[in-house]
Image (cartoon, rainbow, N blue to C red; front, top):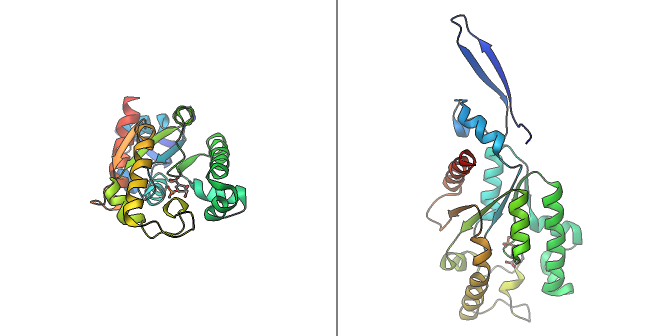
Length: 227
Ligand code: S3P
C-alpha cells in the first residue's frame, strides 16, 4: 500500500507532539483542519482508483468530478476515453460499428483505465455488463453505485440526442412510452451488476451534487475504516 500523505511532527515546549498535514489526497476544507489518526487510516487504506457506476443520467460525471476535487485526485470520464481511442464521438461509433462495436471499444478502454489510471472514474451506464468486469473493477479499486430511480432518469435524459440508446432505428428520439419501456428493461438487466458495488448512494434529485459528494466522503471514510 502506498502512503498518500506527508506529515510533520513537532514537539512543543510542554512536550506535546503536534502533527501537521503537509500533503494528502484529502482536501482539508472538506474534512476540517483536524488531522487525526482516523484520517491517517482512511488515507493509507484508500484504494487509488474509484469507479462510479450507475444508469445514464444518474449523475456519474458531475458527482465524480466533485468527488475528485474533494479528494484532490484526477478525474476521468470513460466516455471521453472511448472517444479518444476511437477518434470518433459516441453517436458516430454506434452508427458505424453498431452497439457491439461500441461495447468492444468500451471494454478495451475500461481495462486500460483500470490498469493505468489513478483517480476517480465515471463509467458509462453500460460498462458493467458481465460478472467478470464487476469482479475485476472491485479487485482494482473501490466500486460505487449512484442509485437513481428510473422515473428521475427519464426526466433527465429524454430528448438527449447524444445518447444513441434513446433513439430509434432511424435516429429519431423514441416516443415516451417506448423509451420508458426500453429504459426500464435495460435498468432491470443492469441492476444486479450495479448492486454489487461496495458503496451505494441514492441520487434521486432531492440533494445537490455537493451534498451527495459529502455523503459519499462519509461513506468512503466509514468503509475504509472498517477495512
Ligand atoms: C450508455 C451510456 C452512455 C454511453 C453510451 C452508452 C449505456 O454513458 O456510454 O451512450 O449503455 O447506458 P452515460 O451513462 O455517461 O450516459
